[in-house]
Image: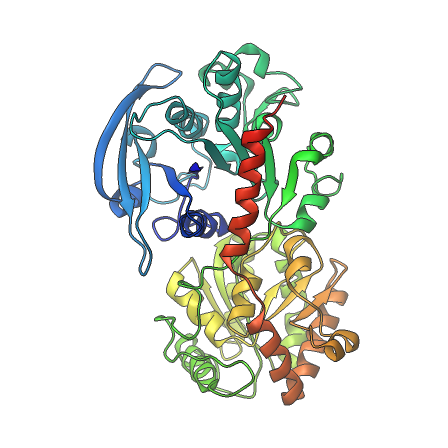
Length: 493
């Protein structure tokens, strides 16, 4: 099949979160299965700089009248074939430094409705033959930024255009692309689209709702999250629509790109390691010592190192980490944090690092190399989220033998097996899981991590289970291919 992946970001060119990792890995996995996959991306500066041999394809008019160009090139990823990539040539919309979604005051750009409507619109133009050399059979749109693509395809089909299957993936339902109602007139959709059975959401325009309503097939990034978003607690106001469309909704667990995340071959690590049973694991101890020195922590091999690589938001449960930090340090642990986000959380962690610099290391911002080094060094990876669609952080922790400590929600519940007595006996334990979104329950999980760490043979056994857990893209790609076939065979009514 000819499959077009539509995303606002893609690793290694541009990354603000896990979406980029998936958008970079899935096309390669599809190509490995023999599918003809391409990607469509907005022309952000980092993307334009990273796509080689860009050549014009054709121009097209936006719904609000401006004319833009489309170029085609290739994205090179080490050890993999180049990914064919379409890039929207729109410097006035995309040629802005820094965060692709927000201005320097951390406010969403006032024209984001145009910037991301154009992404979906360009996908629909390709589906209708904009590139005479290649027309997709299926368009796979990722998250709210690309969510109008299924709506444009739906109305083009109604107007007699070709049948092109559409798939929409929810990576995080909490971010919906909500805009003022008067922005609808610039989107190029018929008036019938702005109603309850369409983009209308409490008298506003919801890009996310458009994708959920008009796509032929829906997916999200873990089986548990697919169930959770059909409930009022996690449905973010869209649970009714999701229950209505549950028959076309699938949960496909994200995977990990072994070419990028592999402790045996990771160039970011001072020394690689493998064989999780304990042989050839000296590299992990070396990584820990080097990171402790780099962050100004006490170089103590006996101190369990807890790592946190995250956006700093309350959704990620970081107030639990702050509330339980005194107890963690009192038990002899250390914390290394990498991330950025809400100002009060950044400042709170900075203050804790200043007060106990040999036990708490905080790096505000994001650094891909440092992230790899932290997983390579860490003993425990903290992901105590309020909700978590899939989560890649805990998967990286598993791969690198940094046992995840997670709350039992979404993809965290699907990927981490608690180190309870029962699961220890069965040989399936891979980390630590707690249920209540409360400091007390989180602290109990931390105490269990310390208790296991003191039993070295048991710790090595659980670490071995974690590092052996399969997380391959071939399995995920096969599931996506099945969804694409369904979208082609059974279009939305």
